[in-house]
Length: 164
Image 1 (cartoon, rainbow, N blue to C red):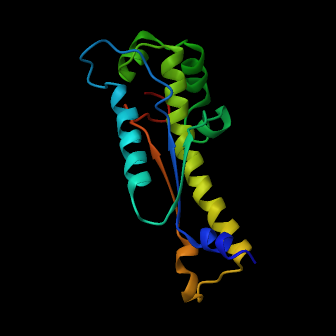
Image 2: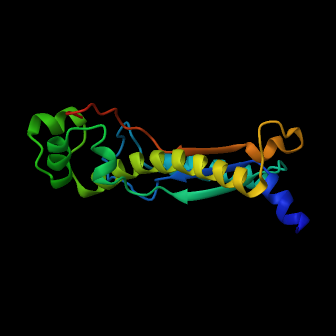
Image 3: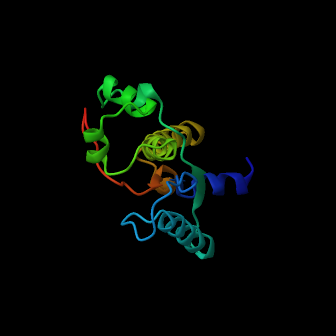
């Protein structure tokens, strides 16, 4: 076994998804300034890169959630209207943003990044357990079980099943 490879495998794993690549044009002074999300992500990256803590950290762009993923929680008809720009005036007002493709992509990446972060932490944990043949009684390799994931994204509002 390559000792450096084993050491790397034993470091805590932390993947961070971000969606600041999807910005929505907002009027100056809007209460949701898009630039803050990139600033937060870059500050976290700088802190981790400058840190002397030993951790495997990977930053990934948030994928767009699929129709299948969001329809497990939200009404399919509502999703179709939102994705195609067929929302009523009242529905758009309730969301708080005018309908734009930018907003659709930002929304899908917010959800997609959260789903991807959860799946990534689980898959990395399983990979480590299988690769290192670990079990819960192995005190020597406690760090090998440590797998986190996060999504650095701003929730601009909280949607319900059939309205925004």
